[in-house]
Length: 194
Ligand SMILES: CC(C)(COP(=O)(O)OP(=O)(O)OC[C@H]1O[C@@H](n2cnc3c(N)ncnc32)[C@H](O)[C@@H]1OP(=O)(O)O)[C@@H](O)C(=O)NCCC(=O)NCCS
Image (tube, rainbow, N blue to C red; front, side, top):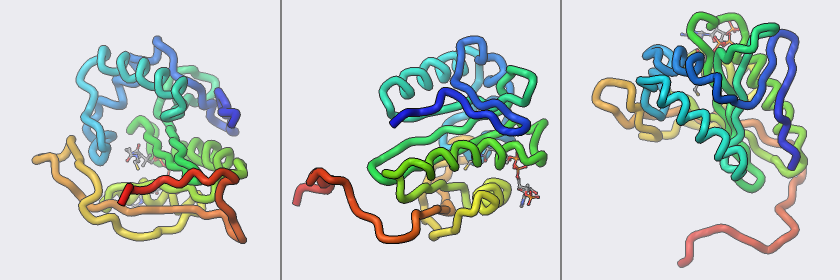
């Protein structure tokens, strides 16, 4: 699989993280409104943002997760991100945008670029995303991408930035490739050893 280092859209440029991004990442990842429904704790220092950049690089190299920073052309400052993971025929993704820029269609535009690339990969038959049960803006983004709500995942995720760090329900959205689909050539099957 060839993973694009960047994506261009009409207004945005998505690119890999670089060290100098840490202060800009801290700015939005420290905002309680932005991280309200995140499943990771709010960043509290630029050093933490620096470590997040290093982690993103490690994950990219190992294939664990691919993340791109969102920049608004022609500025190179990150104002959000999109990230995705792959497991066999399934892909999963998430996104966030600086609060100052909410409501301009940026999350949809950025996520759409990554979504279209994932859907173009022949081995990907399902693309999914979850959002907190009360995260209506995120649910709307997924609907605008053409994804359908599969179900409610009860007690799905810890929300460490909400008071009491509750384990909350989430919505599961998915796109699936239509038509007859088959599994991989190899006989490798994942499962529990009964
Ligand atoms: C969710 C998020 C990424 C949306 O970013 P954005 O750039 O404002 O998104 P867009 O402008 O592309 O689309 C937002 C849509 O949600 C709608 N929306 C915004 N707030 C809403 C609310 N409270 N209830 C319902 N819809 C809402 C907008 O009207 C828009 O839909 P429309 O185009 O039909 O009018 C942004 O709010 C964010 O970063 N939130 C924090 C991080 C997060 O929750 N990420 C998702 C984790 S799954």
